[in-house]
Figure 1 (cartoon, rainbow, N blue to C red):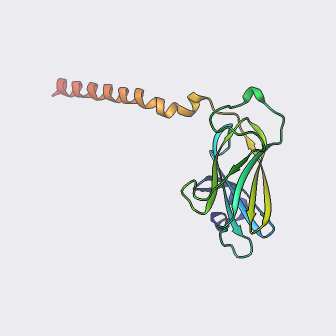
Figure 2: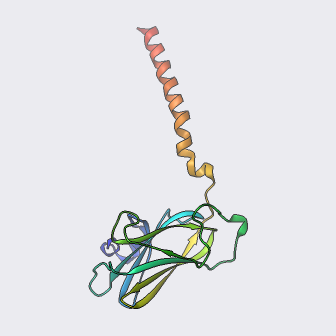
Length: 178
């Protein structure tokens, strides 16, 4: 696991296939590392991932069934709610198959986070007849405005026009001088 390569204090700044490492926990001989993208999480679409390994051997656990649940810990904020596609109801189970993000070691799922505030991401692991539930508290920021989210795409057209105008200006100037 990527998190094992760094000291514990540096785990929070690592990035991987499913986003940034949010946290890690060990329960009952199983270690879970939680990933999230975008980070910091904000209301709206997000990719949540979990890497599972045997705490004793350090080997990846590939035979587990994993699902995510999001439980709201803070007061509801309906005025800041995001109601886009994929938005989940708090407490609803979302299956997290391996390989969703392309990395076959990670269990991941696309989740629509309905509103900002303090949330708990529960990673439910079912393996060999036993169940383990990891709980990771996370803070979800308000959704970014569409302009803030898409400004790089919107800036391409004016930038292209400005570069074309600059090119024409320089060509005319070169003809006058030459």
